[in-house]
Length: 217
Image (cartoon, rainbow, N blue to C red; front, side, top):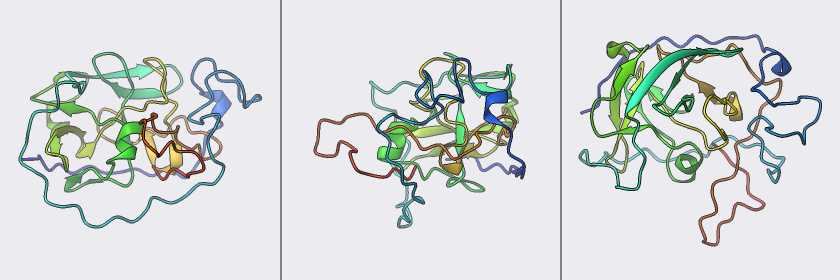
């Protein structure tokens, strides 16, 4: 059964210049430079609000994730240069939270294509903690029955636009995705000057290649 934890979300009104705290390798003066922040080269220009979805069905009973799904075995609270306090998994990948989710009660609204771009931090037990308080960590049962880690009640995710551990290209994507800190709050230290769009979902081999679509996650 998912733990319900309350968390206070602090909303910052000021935007910080991107170039002052961009991940290493980002060149704000050249949009075609290596490691652009969260924008794919073939990304459509139109931004869209997330589509309204019907109330999710009651989740299935907890079940083990598929064998080919990577689990999050450890949460590490640390400080990164320019960004400050973050939480990473055991491999150093920065974790994020989604404003369209909820923390009280915990619920993940990132499914299907969204979850391909933002893989949920799944667990089959209790992850090891370093720099993250035990009373801030819980789980929520997703619609497919798998268990996702929550911090401060907020489900947490990785971002496939991050190409190496320690990057935070997902910061501010869609105006709804933010680096999570060890208390489950949004880290608003380093924000882009615009509203980056997410990278395209991985090619599935089906008819939906993402071409000409707008991504709402």
